[in-house]
Length: 95
Image 1 (cartoon, one colour):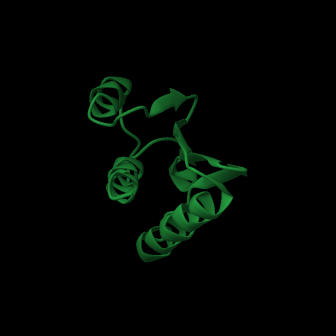
Image 2: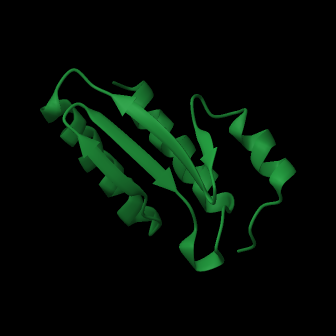
């Protein structure tokens, strides 16, 4: 799968709420009421990632979760990253 050109990345980011470009990844910070809610969300993301065989970088700081998506095998952003971000948004919106 080929990496996306810069213009396409910019266009797709506009369709994702609060995701930002950080070098070769798209990143979003999520905030929850407490630690257990944050962990519950991470567990849901983990299930999605396993299904898709596309795993984000996850940083947990008490009630905050930071996710970063990139396609390591391609050295940048691909369609897979934006598909996963959209699926993650669906999880978060359901909260």
